[in-house]
Length: 143
Image (spheres, rainbow, N blue to C red):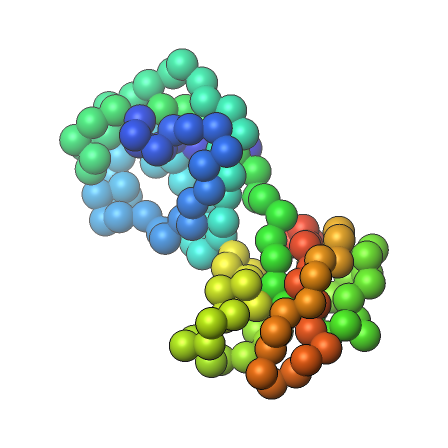
């Protein structure tokens, strides 16, 4: 997938969350190139930086054409369900945003009810609510 991104952010391996288009984007001639591959709330990783540049009136600077892909995501899951190769439906494991493990337990880029395939099972999480949780690495199933 291709998109345009600001020169300062155009680094291979850089990840970002697309927060949605700005009002200025609705009438821009580059909107299709910038926005057609992006979905609000998704995480993307830059896999290649191209040489093509375009001026963006919103950024008041140049955007660079980049290749992007959805990276692997991680979240906590009951150890009984944490099996490599298994397809799971994502449900945030808790809503305790002030827990020290919250960032590793909850997946950024996945919405409630979305399906993902488990690629790998990582170590345990020291969860005060459920001691049997494991971190799983997943790829979101599109469609």
